[in-house]
Structure formats: structure tokens, C-alpha cells
Length: 514
Image 1 (cartoon, helix red, strand yellow):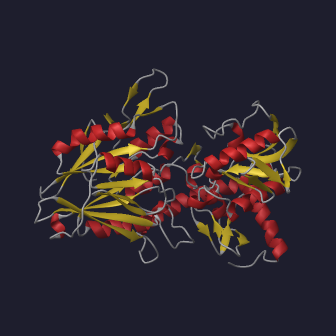
Image 2 (image 1 turned 60 degrees about the vertical axis):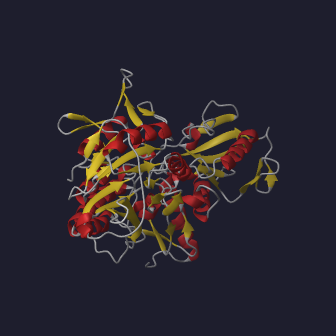
Image 3 (image 1 turned 90 degrees about the horizontal axis):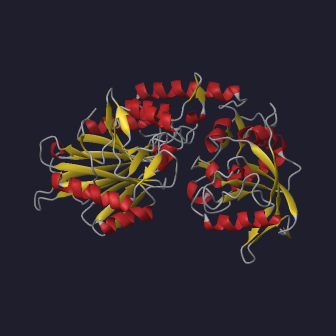
């Protein structure tokens, strides 16, 4: 792989515009972010690591090319949730494909910390690419020692706070520093202040570089904050939003590609002949059916998919089976499911109600929906799995109306986050009176209700404002769990598949070809 020079300290970012004199004098950085699936999406029309590999090879034929990924790749994903050969995959398939695709450098996203500490260490060790982190440290939970994350190759090497890359002809040096959203607290992770760490890294790296740029996984407003504080950073290659952005702040630019490699950002860096400054030209590249998949990587993707399909079949799910013909596209885009009730959220909630017919309403956290796409045409069981990769069990909960009203009130304050709630069609929120309405009747604080929810939400795992939803908490009277084989409430995905199959029968569409 291409070599980065590591700096064990801290570092930062930059930008500009214009075009290069020759390809030989240009450094090309291809930027990915938030990639969860190795295969193509939208029935094979967009994305896929095999297409990414083709684009990488095309650029390597012309430019000195580096491939970076701005966080979120080991989790969550369809394949990552499966167990293969007795072990939870937990991102192994993604690291495998990133190695084949020629990824050179990554930073942590918040979802890297979804998986167990030991599994993340394995993924780091398995990676052929380099890692950089200016603000995230590892904590040994047995000894209480805080230190940089490390990679064993074969000796233990600390992940640096910044890296340097040198243009092939020695024309200039690029420093790269990072920052990560501190939204996924774990006992083994320490998040230093992202702004102070970023500044410290920039100060360390700037004297050794002609330009310093950022590789971040932050909310867009936090990226803006960095550029306002560090006006000499021309480019931040960011992640987290899942939707492409190119935002100018002062003389700097924030670039974010679409999730799941539906697009790639290309940044060309070169020295301007007139000013002598390093220029940056950024362009969003589509990764669609016009790009031929790389045969080697395409074959490797299929091997992983077959392993995952075998695991899903053991759960009673048949990935290729068409379960539903869609009349109106189902909205699973993150920007909508985390800010408003969508038709996909309603469909899932109705499936929950159908699986628990004695309950009065269904509620689940929007972060359970991970597909970040519009589902059109037909819905296969794989689409259901992609929509709900974490699966999870359904709980039937007896609780007071006061808890329901509090849930719905808090949900309004959690818009844009995974704690925002999706629910069944028969429940709504009266914001003027801060209370829920079920079947047209206001929810009374003192009354007892029976609802169905997902285990993640009602185990108090939605940290922060929703962690009052757990057994034993005030107003939670009882929680009933279901584990019997064949019980639809034992796996949300099976419940949704069964519900959709029932809709197909009602609509007379069962058995029709896509």
C-alpha cells in the first residue's frame, strides 16, 4: 500500500480551486464516508465496493492517488450482523473489501464503537490501510490506562494523531488530521475535545506541511466550527450526514459524499504556478451503473454475500424472496426517518402491532432503520434485513400514560438523532398540550396502556434522554419478552416479512414476479 508518514501528536486540514498543469504534478484523494454495505444497492444500480475499486484503478492510472474513508464502516451492516463460522462478522467483510479496493487511510466514526472492543482491535489489525485519530484514545478497562489505539503489524504500532503524504515529485507535503463525533460512549473509548485536539494537531503538523487538511466524522455544524476556528484549513473531508454536501466556510470547504459509496468525492491538489499556493479542486463522482464492477472484488463480495445469506436462512429468512410489491416508494432515508414520521416507519410499526394484536400502539426508535434509501418497485427479504440489520425482539410493555407522554415529548427534542421515534398510525403527538393521542383519544397520565416496542428502546439503551425506558423505571409496570421458536415477536425482521406477506395476499399480488 502507499506509505504515509505518521506524526504521533495532532493535525488538521485545507482547500482551494483551479486545475493542475499535469497529472504527474497532482495528488488525487478519493474520499468515501459512511460505507456499510459491500454490495451494490437499489437492485444493483448504485454503489458497491467493486465499482469503487474500478474508479480507484482508473485514477491510479493517471494520478498519484490516495483513498480515504471518513469514518463509519465496521458497523452497522447487513453482513456485519451475521454469525459466520461461529463468530459475529462485525465489519470483517468491510475491512476485507476495503483492503482489496485499495483504501489507504481511515479515521474513526461513531459506529466503529458499536462492536466489542476486542472485535474492533481485530478489524484494526486486519486492515492493510492506515488509521489516524487526533482526538480518540483507548482505555484499558482492567488497568484504567488511557493510550492511543494501536495496530499489530506484527509489532504494536500506535495510531498517530496526524499523517503526512508527499507528492511523487517532491513538490509539496500534505498533512492530514482528524476529529470524531463523541456520540457513542463506551467504557473503552475516551473522546478528547475535538476542537482543541484538532488545533493541537494542526499546530504540530503545519510546520511540516505545505497544506493541512482534515479527515473528520462530525456533524456538519461541528465541521463548520473547525473551519471558523482554523481559517488556514482549506478542506475538510467529512462524514456522518450520509448525504453529499459541499459547504464553503470562509476560505475553506467541507466535502461529504453520499453514504454507501453512491458517490465519491475527488480532490485534486497541486501547486498553483502563479501564487505558489496549494490548490484543491473537488468534484463529486457518481458510482452508478455506468461504472463496471471490478471482477476480482465483485467475486469476493459474492462470497461474503453467500455466507451471510446462509446465516439468514438459518433464521428463517430468504434474502432473494420478494415479499412486497410497492405502490408508493418507502422512505427510509435517514434525513426523513429521524425528523418525521415516514411511510416506512409506519409500515414497520403496523407489522409490530400485527405481531402483538393485544397491544394498543407500536413505538420504536428511528435509529433501528439503517437502509438510508428509498425502496421502490419490490421489497425483498434482503431489503427488510438491510432496513433493520440489528433485528431485535419485540417487547409488550404495560406502562402509564405519563411515560408515553414523556416519550413523545422527548422524541420531538431528538430530531435528527436515532432516538427520534417512529410509531403506528393510530398514535400521534399533540405538541400544544405535550401529550399523545391514541385512537383519537388523549393519553391520560394516570391510565395504564399496553404497547409493543423494540428491545433496544425498552432496555434503556437509547442513551441520554430516552434511558428512562427500562424495566423497573417509574411508570414501567411490566415488560413481557418472547423467545419461543416461531413467535413473530422473537425477531422484528421476521414480523415485518410476515406482515408484508399478508398484505400481498390481501392485494392479490403474492407470487407475482418483480
